[in-house]
Amino acid sequence: LLLLYHLLLIGNSLIFTCTIFILAAILTKGGFRPIPTQVVSYNGFSSSINSAISSACSAWNGAGAGTLVTRSSSTHSNTQFPLKNNVNQITHTNMGKNKMMMDTRLTQVKIVGSVAYNTEVDINVNTAYPWATTGDPYAYDFQNCFTHELGHLLGLNDENSKSDSTMYSITALGETKKRTLAQDDKNGIGVIY
Image 1: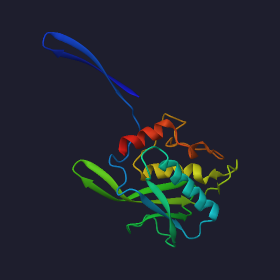
Image 2: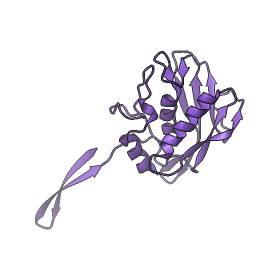
Image 3: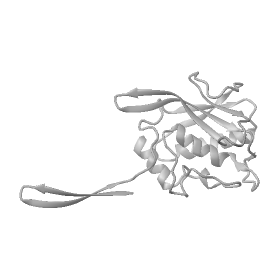
Image 4: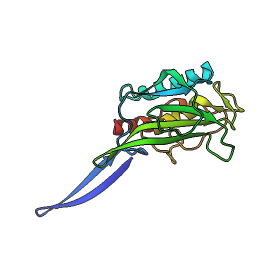
């Protein structure tokens, strides 16, 4: 929340005003277009991973802006990341533990006037890290992290101060709280869409 105070001189009167802004970390002002969009899973993902992807999509679709993203019923066999091919692909490769656990790349952006729109976004899952879909305390929760990455696809940036936010930039082994959107995440989506 940001409060901006203004002193305005109107005629001979000094007017005090306060403007309230709800702030969210916006990565791409225009979000993703067109919506709804689809993400396409790697064909080697288990049914539990695909279920976690669908649940992450449902979390954002319940943010109050309508259906924004769904998991496609089709899959792909691509291992190249990122790949500019007009498909929002979810890949998995071993990038090493010195790289991000999940990496989201804007592969195509359209600019209309002063507004940028994501038109293709690829997400890679780094298999160097332990993953689970059950909240296992010795692994990173796939849905927890993927819900965060979908926020990037939809135009949100990392949040560095609100630890309850799905878009908070830090996660931990076994953490599942980012599966559920915080009000800050919903506010950000509301600003974009």
